[in-house]
View 1 (cartoon, one colour):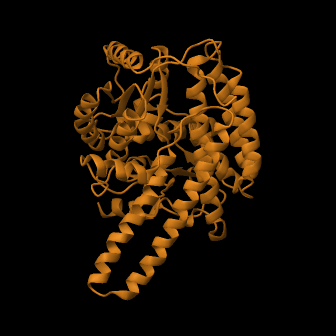
View 2 (cartoon, helix red, strand yellow):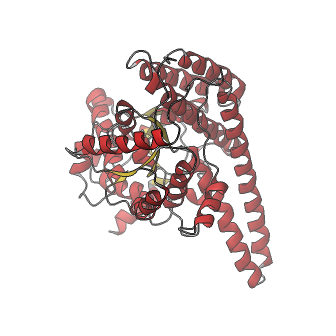
Length: 452
């Protein structure tokens, strides 16, 4: 067992990616590809692995007690390496590859994914030498040793910019697809736009030339508007909250956004940037708590170091908010996509309703407050998407369900473990019927093309 613990120490962490192939699991479809483009812009050979093809492998080497995303991502890496061995034959060198699997602290099982994946990989003789690159929410996903120190700050800022560009592109897709002239046109268009944008990040991320990125983003949005049919009236607006992987990973949630759209909805999902902003926000809150503890024992040297760290996190969060607001306002000049949530505002919502607290932590903070923000912000229904047995999302459900009932806003849990439920479509149809009723009671139809 000691050997196993040594493997966790030596083969999971932050180490140089120079001359390595970085394998990125797909979570958010657009965002993952843009992030790979940023890595390539900094000289790292990054690839987004095909996803969900290896689910059977992921299930074979898990017990079923793990969180579903753990099975999906494990299957992705095992399947990718299996195909690489078949393709390269004797030229296959496992030492060339690094598997990218970040982590989060707290009770969520996500913090243990890379440890469990390491243990499984070590059971394969020819996969024992693949390392796992891990960033952590403990320091708000600082890049650490993965790149040269002098490039770390610029990488973080370019990477964050790719996250919000990915979020904006998602919102553009969700805004136009329910109103497309020809079925499938919006998805095809945004797929091509995604690959072009990934290439632009590869080209411009190193020098942080975000002006070029914005110029092409404008072209994408203007082209996207042409796909919309102005004669189609506005549809009920549905907001999605939940566990970040399941609500973002198209195959794992069985394409729930497209399903809702086919049943007559316009959908907005919680963003990826929301989680990144939350981790930075939490580091500031954590530093404030520790500062009080150090003051009580008069530990002034620790206080000094902590204040410096807290200032750095505040600078990071200020930068993140600034870039996010700038990009959303830029995009909204050409298409009326929805704004993202502000973390401090979500914190105030929980304080106002006295139903949960950021001190408790977990993704439930975002999901509960995000659901309230949807319900009080003109949305016609809320969907909570999460893996079977997910603790934060189960907490969310227990709090949000009666609250939505009091607010008279339709609400539904959508839970996944890789199986297909025969009543899923009927359940979503019932939910959408209720959303249509809410929509009609609250003003109903209007023009969907604004900001021309």
